[in-house]
Length: 382
Image 1 (cartoon, rainbow, N blue to C red):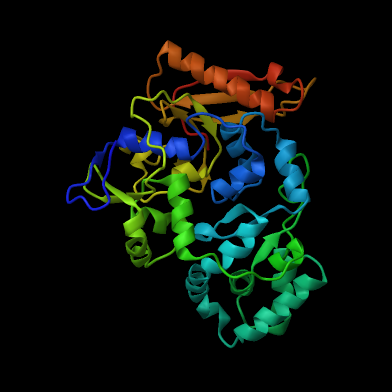
Image 2: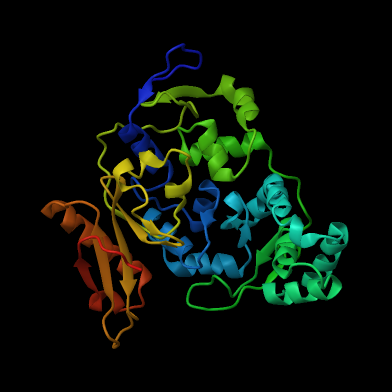
């Protein structure tokens, strides 16, 4: 759909048009053979609150992806897990760890102020220096860090001390935590020490807005602020406005976009996709109706537990989870798909085919053949 840079009446994009544009930017409309590291950079990181979702996010998006590819990037320290966007753990390239983390420091400062009651009498400069020295000696678990800081300030709230260290320092989670096929407790050190490089100047807000639009656009100022956990971004968009195009959504909100970014027709086919919990395509906008129909709002989660999501015709259409070991010779695992509305026979077949593809990539050799794919009515997974 055409748009103009200075039109008094920008074109209106329907929810389906926004859906198709977003899926294309998110590599979910058609898979690409892009290397995993390039995909992590393009998507400006992968939500990694849990350890397995980044692998499933790339499985849904990349042709030829295998979990070992991302695991190798983690072990070679080309990507790392760190708290950034929305105060949650994300998997970023090393360059983005060093450049994005200082950009979101204002959000860490706001978070730190929420814990000020538990930090009475604590010298934050001293805390920063002490915590940096502790994790420089060796990676520390959060418990070890809290206990060491608590010895210095026994009257402070241990949780507040740990949060302060995370807010004041760019602490990454070291491997083997997050490596596919391995396990390990959370252990923290500074980004500079883990990546073997000096601290870097923050990415500019302008650059990050442009990257956000490339991966999530068209989008509003509020969309970007919710995605990043930042405020006062209006002036950045206004500064960039001459080089952008604008639209309106069906509710009248102004949307910004890159002039040459893809905006497929709203009737472009969107094959089913299995996404993990906390996929950024579900969290990257203030108005999530471009992916989550309003009638299904809240149906892909229950309190602190969020289910895997199945996109059907581009929108949230079902939730899923896999139970059982799924190992050759073991009791077969079960992958349960629970549609949120009635699926026609062709849709069910397409969803089942996509489930088998996902299992063939993500399961241990031979396990996909023993997994039982079931459809069920929507019930609480909890």
